[in-house]
Length: 236
Image (cartoon, rainbow, N blue to C red; front, side, top):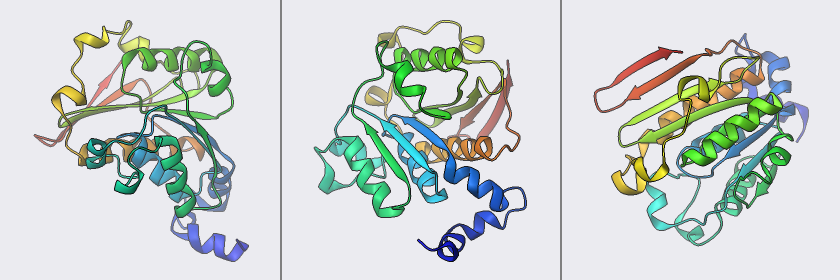
């Protein structure tokens, strides 16, 4: 793509005083890992790809299922049965061929977490279980990686930035994970499809602010109640 075409593509970002050409260059040089290509990962992948992120890694070991499609909007009917990573790659390449995509079709575990996470600048956690969330958090703390966190259920969501320039992390607000079997999830209680779009977009925006060295709120959890349309922040 010619320079003038690249400028045209990202011009509405470049025109923002706080972003400019230098900010766009940072976006195009960034390495971001999205853990989970589902409800939260989908809008994150959408907006980071559209913004021109340089290197995008997506880690997921599931396949696309029909019931995913009410909220996992990068996937389509004709990709049901395909791995979410491969489906995400198709989406990214169709939207922005300049993004370097790396698919990681494996579950994040004790054996591979450090190796995978160490290759990226910013980590985005869109996983759906607490064992993965705490493993990712602890690995980011060990490797001094910024972690963008989000969770969803029903009409409610949470967003936070952890371990950014020495800020607090997940264990500072929730010291120990609950047992996964004791926690309700989307499979049992459901989720309204637009909710992960809201929370995932907030996560993507925080990521772009981090990349472009804009201020982000740390040591703070944002609670989103879309049923009653209330937004609340909790300092910790």
